[in-house]
Length: 136
Image 1 (tube, rainbow, N blue to C red):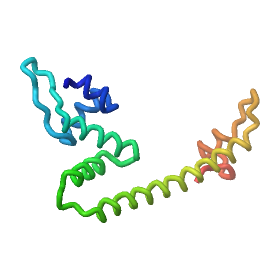
Image 2: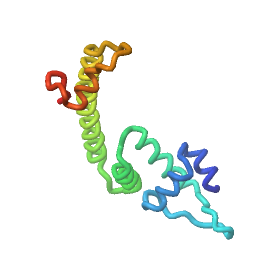
Image 3: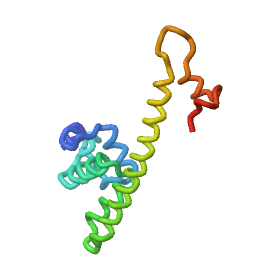
Image 4: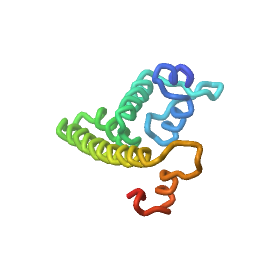
């Protein structure tokens, strides 16, 4: 299959697929006589796996490591589970940070009149002009 077909079937863009190939994320692809890339079913499955891992928030490096574990018959499921739980912990930390940012933004929004005047406590806080309303 060509790159357009691989892109459609994997849900990735052609540009992303070329990047993954250049970075060694997926197995090297063969080329047709015309120089076009030719993808096989195994490479398509690798692309789909990476996409699903990326959709779950794993970094590209983490996704590559998980793909390598998939193909490693000596893998231990405990290692895979530990990686997933570490990723969940990172997500939990991000959720806490996002909740704090949300509260700060709501607080700033509540301080702003939102009228046609130039006075804007939000911009003051962002610029650090008013330390009472500054962002931590």
